[in-house]
Length: 200
Image (cartoon, rainbow, N blue to C red; front, side, top):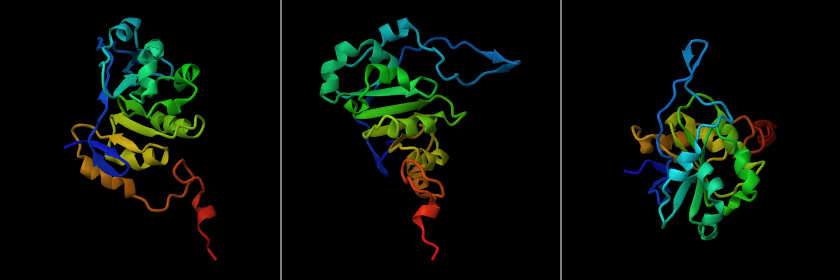
């Protein structure tokens, strides 16, 4: 069974996820403790990884942002045919992509990868993509994506969720309706409740 939720339904995934070649992870310490997350803007991808990334010659491909930026010229025809989507990790700078591709709507899919859910950067990225950069196409969350996050991801502008492989997508789907009237304004409903509901 598929673990992909798109527009409030479980569906099959037509996109091939292209991953960077694996490298040995360096254990980082701070104040005597292992650091489990990356700092925003931290460079964690080497030129060798980018060069060694294999891109399938056909079909819909979801590429790492760093690979797209490095190989943009050779991918132009496929971008024009709507065959290329982009993914970035929560610690990567979205501005790096904007600098080379100001119109993100050229991509039918943008995805944000959560290696380990430790903070709210994915929510900020969703909000920025939808509001500041006007992205209107499919926005996907994948990686360490769990049921309890889906409702808030939806409020941040996401409409596609690849649930973690060890979890049940059918159960996660119900969480999109956990709340009926959110108090705050957000991407999915801009007005706060006091502006939407008349108490007369």
